Every structure is written in structure tokens, then in C-alpha cells.
Image 1 (cartoon, one colour):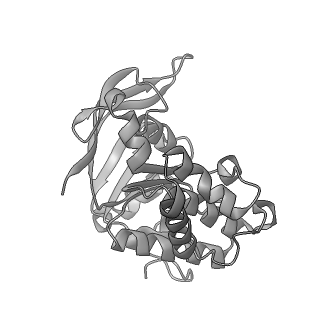
Image 2: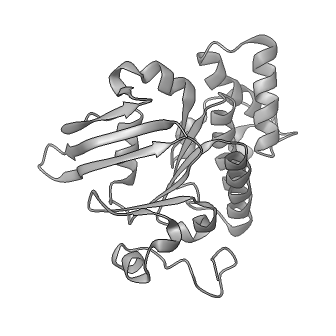
Length: 247
């Protein structure tokens, strides 16, 4: 597999002296389903902001496809989609269709190609028939799928999703999980940031756990111990009584 991202001794220190990321080194390859876990404030979102060039490191560097990220921003904008936790911040259109057209249009996708991209995104996110709906009338789960569809319409190679299950009911969680499984099966690289690991643990091919800006685990999900999950403020994902947990 080809390498997408590489972090080399990456650190981020805030102006008040607090360390947000502490000398992280790792690589991410195409086709992975990477679950980035950790309690709130562990550094998950900050790390990904560096990966897409939204934050500047205090030390170290990020490479994308083997090149320093500063020279790769246009390519990242085409190949990497980012779904933020606050889906409202990603809705720009007065209708679902208009919203889905926003990203591709900025990439100069027009005409029949734009129509095809919108149609494909609607189908993958199961939003067919909602093209003329106002985003404000959608449920929480539908809005989350719209945010994902907006990224899919740009046809990225990699999708980063920040806390995708936040404030969703169980049926909506199931819909998002099914979408993730389908996207990864077709070859998309998925990077899911969440502290709700039990919902997507069984789908992931690799688990990265952060705590206080440091990597405390990086490997096969099944290799992580119960003690490690609990010490990192995470639910142990092998428990009876929850439909989405591994038993």
C-alpha cells in the first residue's frame, strides 16, 4: 500500500505553554480504517488539523505522499475530505443539492461531472429524494450524512471524520456505521476520531490511542488490553448488553 501521511517528531505547544501534541511519529497508508481514540482533549482533533495543514507545528513535520505538507496543500484539498464534529459548520447551501454542489464546484467540477458526483454522493449517503429539502429540516443523523455526502461529492481518496457519532440516536449510529463499512470496502482510507470506540471498533483495521498528546497504543485493535482502554478513559469494547459492542 502507498503511504499517505507521515508525522515526524510532531509537537504542538500552545501559547500558554501547554503541550497539545508531544513528539508524535507515525505513518498512515492508503486503504486503512484507522480508529484514533482517546478521551476529550487527548489531541485527536489537533493531530488531524496538522495532517491537513490547518495548524502549524511547534516542532517536527508532516509529509503527504512523501512530500512536506506545505507543498501538498492543493493535492490534499482534492484527495482528503474532513468531516468536522460540528456539521452545521459544513452546511452552505439552501437545499441539500446546493450544499452538495459547493465542494465540487470549488474544485472546478462542472456540468455533467458535477451532476454525476452529486447523484453518487446522494446514493452513498442514502439521501436520495431529499435534493430539494432545506438542510435545516433534516434530522441529526441526516445532517451528519449530508456532511459526509458533501465530502464524498468531491471524490476524495481519504476521509477524516471527527466524532461522527456525537449526539446521534442508535438508528442514526447504525446508518453511519454501514456507510463507513461500504466506503472502506470500496478502497477509501477512513480515519475516524472518537472516544466512542465501541461503535466502530469492529470495523477498524488499526487502533491509535492518544493520551495527553502522546501515542500510548498503535496496532491491531484486538491487541489493546482492557487496562489500556480504562486508563485512557475509553469504554472497553467487549461487553454484553450493547448491540454495537463486540461480545
